[in-house]
Amino acid sequence: MLIEAENLSKTYTLRKKTGRLKRERTTVEAVRDLNLSVAEGELLGYIGPNGAGKSTSIKMFTGILSPSGGSLRVAGLEPIRERKQLARQIGVVFGQRTTLWWDLPLRDSFALLHRMYAIPDERYAENLKRYVDLLGLDDLLDTPVRQLSLGQRMRGDLTAALLHDPSILYLDEPTIGLDVTSKAVVREFLAELNRERGTTIVLTTHDLDDIERLCRRVVVIDHGTVAYDGRLAALRARIATDRTLIVDLARPAAPVEVPNATVTRVDGPRQWLAFPADANAAELIAAVASRYEVLDVSIRETDIEDVIRELYSS
Amino acid sequence: MTLIVYALVVRQTFRRFLTYRAAILGAVLANTVFGAVKAFIVTAVWRQRSVIGGYDLPDILTYTFVAQALIGPMSLLTNNLDIPARVRSGDIGTDLFRPVDFQGYWLSVDLGRAAFALLGRSLVPFAVGALLFRLRVPADPRVWAAFAVALTLGVLVSFSVRYLAAMSAFWLLDEKGVTGFVNMMTTFLGGLTVPLILFPGWLGEVARALPWASVVLVPVNVFLGKLSGAALAGAYAFEAAWAVALLALGRLVTARARQRVVVQGG
Ligand SMILES: Nc1ncnc2c1ncn2[C@@H]1O[C@H](COP(=O)(O)OP(=O)(O)O)[C@@H](O)[C@H]1O
Ligand SMILES: [Mg+2]
Image (spheres, each protein chain N blue to C red):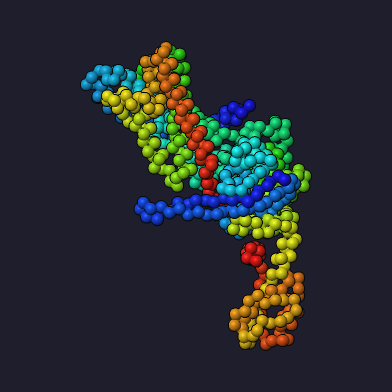
């Protein structure tokens, strides 16, 4: 196993000023009892609502943040204690910040990384050429990072994270704010990296398309712990049960009984019926209408945040 | 060879500062003008007595302009380390997952900054001072070499003090109180406001034993040729001892900070 987390926890302590001299301590359990194993060569979708603890756990995986509890091994190393050895084996990309030097041209940032990671010259030249070609960075090498667009910067960051051939690549919301074309470039690039080089990838994203196109295994984090761990297809099957038909009856009634649907909520004459995404909505409406007097109907599709919320509430 | 990394960081930082050339014009102008103002003041004072604290008029004028020239390299007025800003923005995370020594990395960055400041901010104030006033500029290349050593050790001391102040950002939400206080200490005890030779009695003795004596006083004394032989070796030892002690303390603080680091932002 490349990543092994057992009951991993992280508690932040916040000190808030409550008076002129008084301070109150509050704690936030950002990650609690997280269990996760990631095998070599996986491309893992690491998702969950805002504040779920994704970034915090990635910071622990990368040795930036020390855990408050549990055990963690990454590539056989203890991230905090063996930070420097671990650093040579991992690549990290944060969508919301750059790991490059703001006022240096890309070329100089890469040159610094060449030495920092002690990459053999030949390997460095080969990798640089490969990623510059793949990501279309040729004309940008002499541009300071601060002058790059978000999409260009992201391609620069990806190259920077990969020059030393890391065995694990962590991506924390790499597609955030990118336009459709840049997103497509990044996705295709990641898929190929995983396929051809066998690089293990842990991908955090809010974009379900990213997950659909790239990941077979999905881990859903909520409230700092694993709420779902499995194949994307199985998660999708759960999503599929979650379309909702909202009917307004002429008068309040007991929960309606129709095939292929179950009532999840009743509010006066209004009822909510969950039904499979692949079922025929028209047939369902007809079935309800043949038994009850119906004034109005509407259908609500479920989005990922709803699904995730449901996953942990059940 | 890992030293190459740090040398490269020094060079790249130097180049980073090159892109902000225009910004240093104001600093150069201010350092020069204030140098001239201080020179007029010390000239008036030294007219009362020809030697004060072992300095004659050319000595103190030289002190004045060397001190003005060292404001940049020794960072006598500001902290100049990006650590607190990077802690607040969360960018410090990047510095923590690189396979380099954290303190060594920031030392290299600061050496690059100091080297740039020496070329960009020091030469003009000193040259103008030398043109307008009677300064004691060494003719002996050996004195210049000795000065370079004292200067380098002084930069190490300056860095190690500012590093400790900057690292407080790992514990404090707002480290400006700490860095501001340390900056004031550096400005005052470094002898920029009032030369350390003017500090009376025990105050002077204490001030001359503190690390800040390394940033202006010791290099100037070397520059003036006041130190040679055993006295020079003693001055180096004084600077080096403070540098080693404070850098070691910095390493301890770094290790503690890593245990409790909180990295902001997604
Ligand atoms: N530096 C910090 N100090 C205090 N609380 C934090 C800090 N970083 C994150 N948190 C809290 O920890 C929880 C998890 O945050 P995070 O790991 O960033 O979630 P995600 O990346 O899944 O959105 C949130 O409640 C967040 O407010
Ligand atoms: Mg996040």
